[in-house]
Amino acid sequence: MSAITPNYGYLRGSREIDNTVDTPGHRAALVLGNKTFHDVTEAIANVAERPTTNGWRVGFALSLALLGMLGVTLTYLVSTGIGVWGNNQPVAWAFGIINFVFWVGIGHAGTLISAILFLFRQNWRTSINRFAEAMTIFAVMCAGLFPLIHVGRPWLAYWLFPIPNQMSMWPQFRSPLLWDVFAVSTYATVSILFWYCGMIPDLATLRDRAKSKLGQALYGIFSLGWTGSSRHWVRYERMYLLLAALATPLVLSVHSVVAFDFAVSQLPGWHTTIFPPYFVAGAVFGGFAMVLCLAIPARAYLGLRDFITMRHLENMAKIMLATGLIVGYAYATEFWTAWYSKDHYEQSLFLFRLTGPYAWAVWTMLFCNVVAPQFLWIKRIRTNAWTLWLVALFANIGMWFERFVIIVTSLNRDFLPSSWHIYWPTWVDICMLAGSFGLFFTCFMLFLRFLPVVAIAEVKAVMPQAHAHGGHDGAKPSKEDHSDYWPEEGLSYAQHKAGQKK
Image (tube, rainbow, N blue to C red; front, side):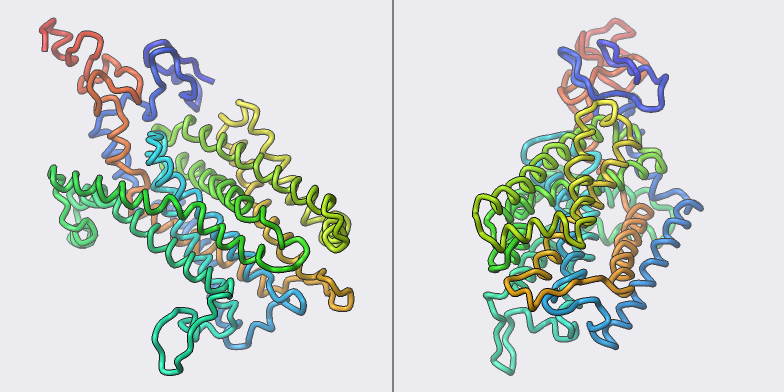
């Protein structure tokens, strides 16, 4: 772990620079390497401009293979019927809804990083918000796929929308499926707007740097005529603030709506008011875990360690630890409520979860979501990228198993023993789960290849050069960087050297 001098200089003797500690009077830098604005533009834009690498081709080919498997299984499912799933009675909800809830939860970190941290002026979000926003959109795409095919006749899915029709038929507004339609469609719309509008200045940068006619045309279309004028910036910042304010309630509302899918039922294990806050905390926990799983390899492969620094990773690890503790508390509350209620059905269900045929899934969930995050109390683990990645991977696995446990173990054991039935997934279920990751990673690989993966304009705004007297969001500039302002004497570097007052 590298040392920190009182002024600025990080000793680059180790692989990772520890910028997680603020010395008195000097906040640690969010962008490392004494970079100028030009350096930032070159480093980030080069990711999209450089020739396609073999590593990207391999990753894209693997993602495309999984996406192809999803296409084959979807074709087989639609042409044959949902009987090819392992669903039965009473387990009518299974992998389709498990995967839906999992993917919806993954997208929550993107909205929280983009909107809530922006409103709270947490400047460390600027290097990771573009990753998180893209992840949100791709996760919502994966999530929307499963309710669509779960209805059994996806070509009639438009019946779910309250639109005039010749049959005078209206949706059943008491149906949880309809609640999900409104929640997911609203979430997807606002997330896409927020992601795209925030990217407009950076798309204009790529437009101005593009060497091919096709690149100039495409980036020019999507940058909407951005010129960087004062009027454009004023309107952009106002729009960004309004979208952040609109997106903020979605973090709490969307997964609360999904939680009500279960909480409004009478089934043991589902009929509980703790589900909405419990689901939201779990979604943020799993979402930040997915951001870490994506950002840690990407920063190493794309050379973005000076932008996505150890400070960013540790801050996300702390949020994971906090939300993981909330999730663990929710698990304990569920078991305590079942015991305290003295309800025979509730008590027998939770005992069944711990000792029945699905006990392996329950204990996997508890280890991944409760035990593994406790390692984040240790700073050495929080500030080691690859051990942190491992903890985040466990968290993602645990959140999927949480959905499996909630849905399957409650449905297969209701009030009547005569209707109990064990559920096991078929090869179609498993292939569709793997294929959904193919859809997610295919979109993500295309994002890495053609779009600015870090918000260029927002990163520049938190650098010392963007603020008078060196700013308050970064450390003092070094004397080797001639473009920086030298704050002690109110001089630029050249003036400082010449001994002239500014």
